[in-house]
Every structure is written in C-alpha cells, then in structure tokens.
View (cartoon, rainbow, N blue to C red):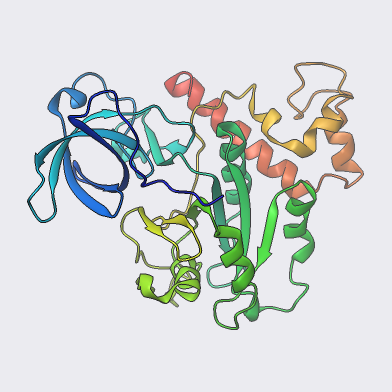
Length: 329
C-alpha cells in the first residue's frame, strides 16, 4: 500500500488544518497538505518552558495549524499543535547545543537507511552499529547501503557487511556510477517513508538523483586533502518519489550517539547477542569482563565477529560516560 503522508485528515475543529512537515528551518516550517505547501510559523506558547529537544517540529511530524492567509503565495498559517509521533530517529545533539539535548532527525518514518561508501571516504567504524541500535530502540526498520562498489573488488570486506544481512537487516551493494544496485535501491524505497543517513561524500544525493533525476540534489566531490566529503545537503527535507513513498536526505554526519538508551539496556538492541546472553552466568552480565559470559564465548568462537563486539563495548562506554556526566539519557 502506497504511503500517503500528505493526505488531508479529519480534525475535531474545522478551523484547523492538518499536514506533514517537509522542511523545518529557523522556526519556519513548510507543511504539505494535499498538493499545497503551506508556510507556517510556530505558535509562541509552544516555545515556552524547558527545552528537552533541539527542535519542536521536525521533518515527518504531523502538525495541526490555523490559517493566516490562504490566498497568499504560498498560503500561510500558524502551527498550534505537534501531534504525537509513532516513532522517531534521534541522537545526542552536538556539544555546542549546551548539554543533554535530543536532536530528532526525523519522525514518523518506516525505515532508516545507513549509507556508507566502501572508499572515498572510508566506512565509519561503529557508525552502522549505532544507527541500527537507534532503529531497534524506536521501532524503525534498519537498512544498510554500501555505495561506490565500483571502486573495489567484488569481495572487498563483503563478509563484514553481509553479517548484518544474517541478522535480518536488508543490505544493498550499489554504485551510482555503474548503475549496480540502483534498481534494487529504487524498489527498497517504493511506497515507504525513508530517511537516508551517512557522512558527507558517501553518495546519498547521487543515489537519489540516479533514481529520480528531477530531484536535482546537489552533489560534491570528496576532498583529496582530508578524504572527507563536503556538506551539500544543508537540511533534512522530505521529497515525494515517483514510485510512491517519500525520502528524506539528511546533512552528512560523521558520528551518531543514540538518544534515550540506558547502558543497562543497550545489549538488548544487539540481536546477535541474544543467544549467547541466555548462557551468561549472571543475568546482569554486560559482556565485558564478567566470568562465564555466553556472548564472549561466541566472540571467541568467531560466531560474533570481534569488530561487532568492539562496537558494542565502545557504545556501552560512551553511554556510561554520558550517564555519569549528565544523568539518564
């Protein structure tokens, strides 16, 4: 069934309209209602009180708004209410935000797509693991796309990436340059509400342009000096797809610290740990230095790869340090 996020819905008060946020910048929102895009601002009372989230309304949020000028071009309104979210993908906001603040990247989505390039730039250690933990935490499907596959041999680290496939995640090997996997990528997005996340230069916008050229998303080369990409997408924005569904391309990020996960719970978001966890001597085993740990036994037998366990330990350490400094989050 085709995802239709812009269809008008009935509201209790006919003086209000209800739509979906497709762009949010500096307190101004673009809200889609049917085929019309409204320019809205937030009602002042919504901005009062302590701020626990970096942004009040994000791409994917459903909002209820009142009309200011329906005849304007574009028509204008005021957001009166941000409706409850069915899910979200969020992380710890950047340190310059001033502390323990949530950055919601998108709300009300079906799947989050982690895009990594196999070269130029090199894959980010632990990034995929952390993003998939956030997906597990908030009930969002996680997908992994390995781009620029034309730059390496067919077997380049393929076993590592296929390990995620064995855990039940969809994994695609793509090249916008050669066309490899592009059609599979198109079908993966069909009739779904998706968020693409990855570092600058991994080819998110290039892949989207390959499946729908009229999007016209800006792309840029990886700099030779740093081996990193430069930001070409400056904000998360939602676009309709010709095949049905919607896609949000996000600005490049090089790190991901999942929000709202207690250190004692993080092990539960690694599905490959569940079998070994049942064999641990202690129910509170964190699979670190405890004796008779079932997970560490699987690591020793290489059933769970060492890099996967290392990614877990790094995330666990970061969450414990955050809890120590800032309290629960």
